[in-house]
Length: 410
Image 1 (cartoon, rainbow, N blue to C red):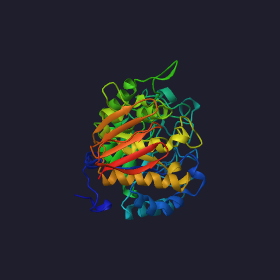
Image 2 (image 1 turned 60 degrees about the horizontal axis):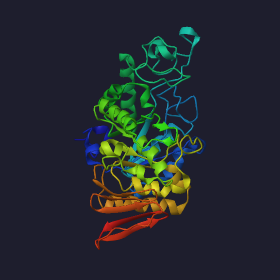
Image 3 (image 1 turned 60 degrees about the vertical axis):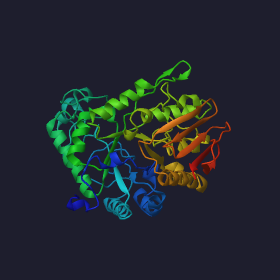
Image 4 (image 1 turned 30 degrees about the vertical axis):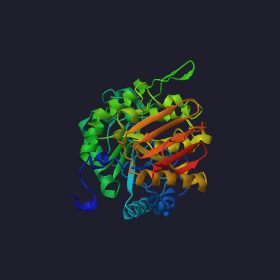
C-alpha cells in the first residue's frame, strides 16, 4: 500500500483522489506573501486550515528564485527562498502532515534563470549549481541550443527544452526529491509552455497524490465583451488534461471568466445551450479545479479580478457545484471574519451533503439577475438579487448571505 517515506496512510494509487472527488483546496498565498515570513505565518494557521476542511494547500514556489515571488527559479535544489528557510518550510510540511492536510508544491519548470553566459552571450548555462545544464537544455527559440519549444514561450528568460531526455530525467529526479521532502501534490505553472505529454511523464515518475495544471489562455471576447459561447476555450483545457493521460486536473479558467461576468447581472451565461454549466465543470467536472481568483488574477497584480462586491456569490456557486473548488487565501484570511465564516459554512454543507466533483446539476433558473440549481438532488442554491426559493416542503434553508442562499433536504 503505502511506501516507507510517506507513511502507511498514503496510497501510491495515482488516481485515488481524482476518483474520490472530495477535495477542497486552499491557495495558501498571494503575490505579496514573500514579504511576510510566510512559512511561519502558514504554520500558525494549519489547525484552522484543517478544521475548515481543506484537503490540500497550494504553497508558493519553494525553490531559490531570481524574483522574490518564486516564479523565476534558478537553483531548484535550494529550498531557501524569500518565503523562509528550508528548516521553516519543513516544519510547515510536517505540521500539515500531522493535521492530515496535503501540501501542494508549485512546479515552475517551463523556464529557468541561467548562472553563466554561454551560446550567443546569453545567460543560458547553469554552471556551479545542481542540475548544471548547458545550452542544450534551453529551447532554440529562447537563445539556447536545444530544440524548438513544444509549447508557448515565456518571454525574456531561458525556456527549458523538455524534449531532451537528460532534462526530463533530472526533472523527475527533482520532483521525486520534493516528494521525499514532504510535498504530496503538484501544481504545474505555465502549462501552456511545454507539451502535456511531459506532464504525464513527470506525474508517472514522481507519483504525486494529486496534480493540477495552469493552462491559462484568453477567453473568447468580441466587440461587446465576453462571448456567451466559450466552448473552444474549455476545449483547449480539456485537450490538455487528455494529453496528460487524464492524470492531471486543470484550473477551470473558463468558469472563472464566465462567472465573473455572470454575477454582474448576466446570470443567463451560467447555462450552456445543452443546459449544463458552461465551463470545464460542465464537460469534465472530475478534472475541473474551480476558483474565483488567484495570485495573478487578483491580489496586487489584479490581471483579471473577480468583482469584489460579488465574492460570496462566486463561492456560493463553486462550493455547491461539481468540480474541485479552490478558496483563495486573501478572501479566506484577509477579508474579515464574516467572509471566513460564510466560506466555512458553505464548505460544511458541501461535506455534510456529500457533494463531490461528479455531482449532478439541474439548472432551474438562469436569468439576468438570478441563477438557481439543484445539485445531487440534495442541495439547492440561488445567487443574484432576483428573489427565489425552492418549492416543496423538503427544503430547509442551510445558509444565506448577501445575494445568495443555499437549502438542503430536511
